[in-house]
Amino acid sequence: MSQITTNRQNLVKLSVIGDVSQPRVRAASPYRVSYEGQPLVVPATGGVAYNVRVGHKISDIVGDHVEPAVSMRNPDDTANGGLNTFSCIGNPVEVVTGNAKGAFGTVTGKHGGIEHVMVDFSFDVLEKMKPGDRMLVKSFGTGLRLPDFPDVLPTSLDPDFFEKWVTESRDGKLVVPVTHTVPAKVMGSGLGRDNVNRGDYDITMFDEETVEEYNLGSLRLGDLVAILDADSTFGRYYHKGSISIGIIAHGDSFQSGHGPGVTGLLTSKSGAIEPVIDAGANIAQILGL
Image (cartoon, rainbow, N blue to C red; front, top):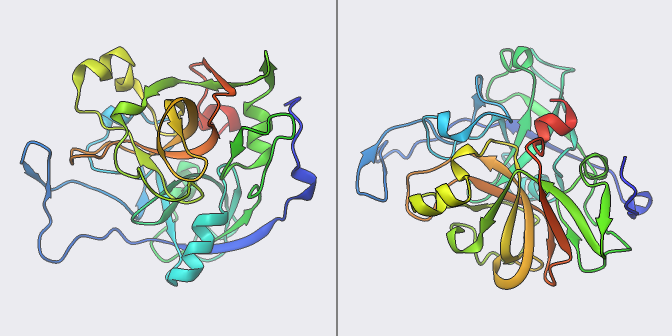
């Protein structure tokens, strides 16, 4: 367990609720156009992905922005804002209606634009689920702080998950296990948003040399990754020496400016985070999902 001090005893545990979303396709056309101008029809966001969960290798998925397991949304936009803001990665989720009522899952990501929260369930539970089923999140983690690391800002991070994942410091820096480092130069959609409490931003995978150099072809859903020279304190932007840590929330994309989405979890403008490569730094392995 973590030896890093937090303020978890002061945090509020709050209910937020949503439904399994329905996959949507624009009425005008089913096509998504690639960065090379090729129109394609493939699975995308929303619904229950019965055969895709965290731990799944992204390059093995035929689709665009595919979200693992269950995509969750509240039909009321304001309530959905609460669901997306207060849900934290690692929070427990209970199914409260439908054939899977009483089953429990885990929040694993948040996807901006479509404003979905992703929830992982075991395969036997997924088989019982359908669009419209309602789920309750016991949100816990908003406002999390690390008193000994004032320049490290946690966002959307469940304290229980944090304590299992980050357990040490070194030379005044927080030591954070990650599967990959990613250069800020390939970050795309999601840049410029004024906060990181909701949504994600995308790793663009179109430059083959960079993909090979940073081993990005091996990315899995649920991997914890470090974005180098990137600050996310009050929105996402390039800043030399800063570092941001997040979780791979959704799959790759062939559209310009898009790719695997990263939901932000930790950031330090001064670089007070030391990422260490650990092949086991995936939420599926850390939480035994």
